[in-house]
Length: 99
Image (cartoon, rainbow, N blue to C red):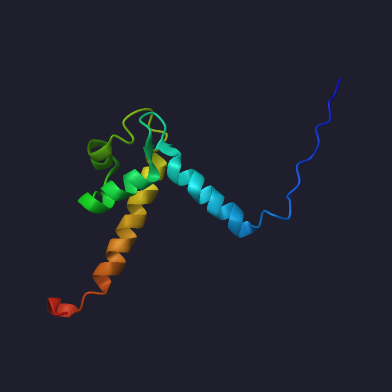
């Protein structure tokens, strides 16, 4: 016998900005590395603090990526974001190091 489930509908209290902020809050507290329970925030902090450039370095610094490797794609994205931020910051430094 086929059961029909009721459709979920969006209520008026949930706007796109509310939903995105809820997703951001959930993703900041939910582990990126489920094996070791390391969050995206912790990974990003280690990358910034130690100028990490590889998944292996991140694993040594905070443990993320040392289990099943499913989070490696996220760690690579965080590394790419950090590298882009560093490149943007370095391009703002005047020539010859004068500020």
